[in-house]
Length: 181
Image (cartoon, rainbow, N blue to C red; front, side, top):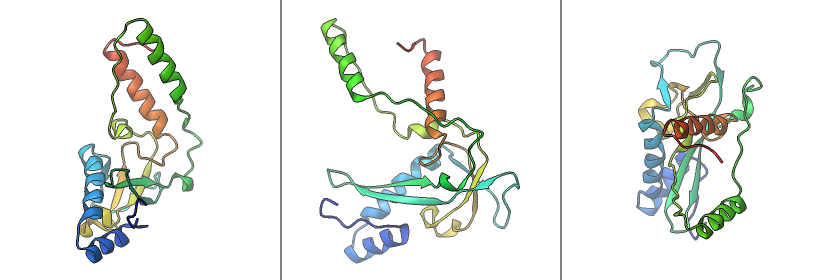
């Protein structure tokens, strides 16, 4: 991608760094995992401790890509395809770019100032309401491989993360006296 080799998993990423004599992918993994740690996305069980019986297992996978400015990016996603989430609402509406452009045009015609922002790691603000656990891989560090982690926050790949993020965002916007239009 953009002339850079893209790994398929964490081991391959670290091996690629070793072969190339750099730390591009290791740094991308660290940055991706730092956000998850900062937002306390997981709670970790003690080594040897089993997940509660009422929790479902979902595997993790690190997805690698290269951005147009040649920065390497690593994002941890969870495989919700193996869990039963039928009791949870997964729908979350998304604004279309056409709608945003039209609203911007209307605002400019009315002499209004437009402000925009990007909420980094937006899924990680909302708590999950589904009981899921996973096993830590090499991306958590060699000392944590095979530890059991309870998923506490929304992760990319979970069917209900978008809905949970939307609910959290709507509540937050309402608390600061904004209203949807």
